[in-house]
Image 1: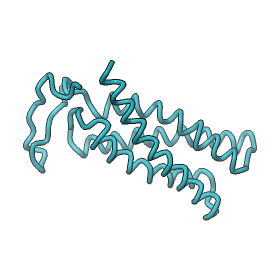
Image 2: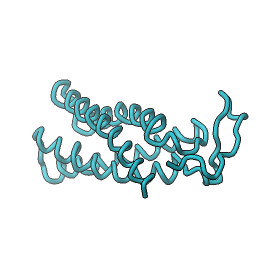
Image 3: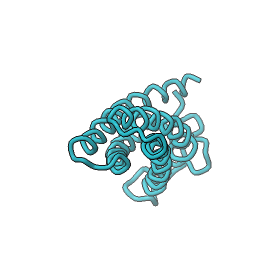
Image 4: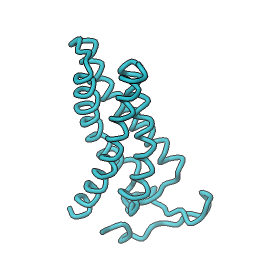
Amino acid sequence: MQVLIHEMGKFGLVGGVCYAIDFLVSNLCHTLLGMGPLSAKTVSTVVAATFSYIGNRQWSFNHRARTGLRREYTLFVILNTVGLLIALGCLGFARYVLDLRGVLAFNLFGNVIGTGLGTVFRFWAYKKWVFLHPDHPKAVVNTGADQENHRPIPEHAGRL
């Protein structure tokens, strides 16, 4: 339970910074640059997700096993795409079903509700598939620059 609370705290701090990036970039793209709401949200999510990967890999889940950059990043991109689709679904529903077109609706449905639901999904998914527990069969530590130099993580490693 202590590890979960620790991970959630770090994930929350990284998420807060990335939320600010997402919010600012989406509003810049939508209100100042005139991009459509879905395009603006897509651009902002890509920028924020890049920062999120670095922060979560290097800090939030740095005690968890590494399974190779290619595998982790591929899964991270896929899961963030699902998170983006959740946010776009909320935003699209507000815009094209409810016909809510103001900046307040854009922020409420895209940046609060959509991002909030996507964040819950991403936290669960990162722990399950991207940043694995050291006991997981795919858990290895990269001891060199290439993927050939891996060794298993001791069972007790990664526990706080």
